[in-house]
Length: 94
Image (tube, rainbow, N blue to C red; front, side, top):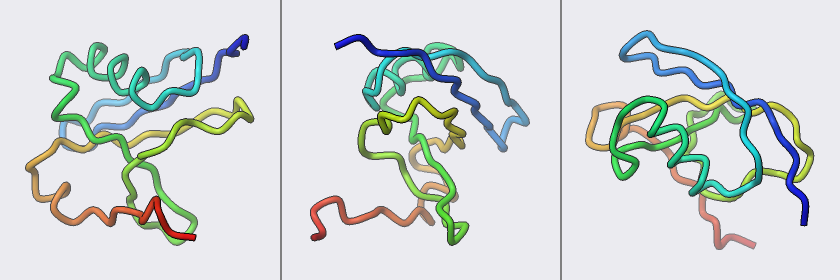
């Protein structure tokens, strides 16, 4: 299947960094690797999050949607106080 490009915006509040880049595909793993490379951090420490409609900061655990809309990611580092407050969705819920 041909994957189209989508714009990824990211915000890293703790270091007052933000930016954007074009990403091809839907894989959350490839996106994490690409973002970690751009931020020069270890991918295993990077938790990509998004804000839900209820304003909760939630980890991005599944592949990106097929709609090719821009995505806004908030960077959280594993082991930090912010990481400890994250609410993980139940991906097995029915």
